[in-house]
Image (cartoon, rainbow, N blue to C red):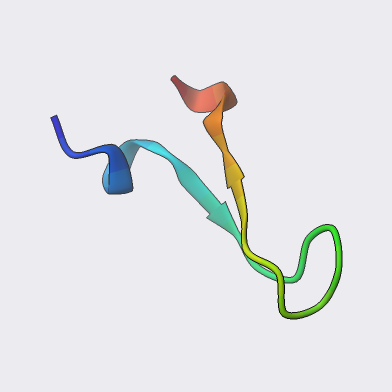
Length: 26
């Protein structure tokens, strides 16, 4: 199971330059 493909990466959230990992897709 590739977590990198499961977890959606939202760029510039909550602040520009910060990558927010949306683990709600799990």
